Length: 578
Image (cartoon, rainbow, N blue to C red):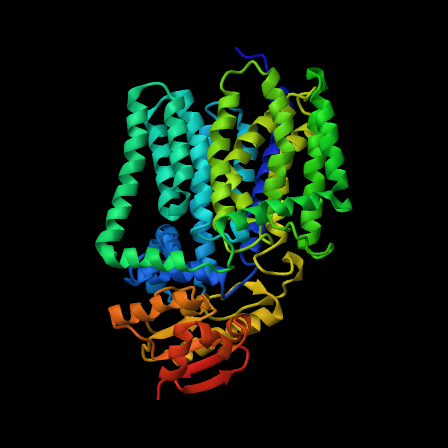
């Protein structure tokens, strides 16, 4: 018979009940913050572009055939949802709905990632690492795309590799295969990074069966996707797409030049604003000299994370000037990798746990390859520091190991301060993502909600809301009756079109001589637009309509084939046949 009294039971339950209440309250607050963040920011370019790609494919056009853009394959996971939304609702609110769909997919990846990490690490560090790594979204856009899906895939592959080594199970081998295949299909130029992640994963595991399952799953899924694209689009259109893309070089830089530009941005840490960060790095290095100086290296690195976060968030919110290095969450992610690397390496030097260094190397190799490829191929420039997002798998392992070490500093079972310290990387990445929506002046400086059209429900600046509404209304009116349309300079405008997209690329503007492939596409498919919209921004970037037509065969052809022109204020020039 138990001798515990009711009073004893109440005493035991007393501290648990407030804890549960706090967990529930915290979950509700996080859900509300997430819902708020999903509504922030709107753009007719990157934001609308990735949704327009999915919409085009959902309406029957083929990737790499009708859409001559390698980014189209990154929209595959969005197509089923976009198709359902388009048929049930139309395109009203489709951008916000697509953000919610991304959160659903990312939540599944998060659950599997955390479960994989728990095969080797404690639940707390696993959760912190998962959150930190998955919040490093390129361009701060929570949408399924060619840029976000590879981040999810790199993180999931790193976690699955750890679980596969620990459990040697076919299930985790299949997860590794799915993750690497998902990454290759969504961003084919990152195939070397995912091939490396797969290779390292199968090399680290013992046993033939899990190796075969991982390789067969990954290779099989990639082969099916490639065969499907070739079957639907046709070999010749796919070959034309490759040739067209090789001719397009948006900023005129070579891959090596772009890589140098990305690396060069890091010299900004020499400015006084980053001196406290450099001091924290120096103190961290000093704390790595002796094993027993763990508190110094962990505390100093935590200080570095806090300072880097404060600078990034303050710049994003407009309290500091725009940083050439970037005030994006991807830029913050690259800084966190640098800050956490030294204390983690020091712990690995003294650690007796076999496999920890292997986990780090296995994540670092594909991450560095992916970051290099992204830096060498992106046209977005240093302002977004998008290559930092490719370090997600590496950040995952660094954070789980750093948070584990921070937890070892706990001297009392309920030391909340130390537990909070261990969660710092996740808090830092969350603040970085919350503070800056894509191409906006900061989360606290957007104040106008769009009421209608594809961007309905999103909050942006008054000028941006007016411009997007004008674009949506103009395109919708011009395409009544199902008229085919071509847009130059605002790919998101296709979301409002009532007719088909008469273009070989949703993102189309001044590509110079390479736009001869657009005229070839018109001839090959027989699909030409009834109406053309050239945004004022696209004309301005090209140096004016006359200068643009002088170097671009597409723009020159439009000037003669569509002689009826009129200017729509807030949008640009509308071209129509006689």
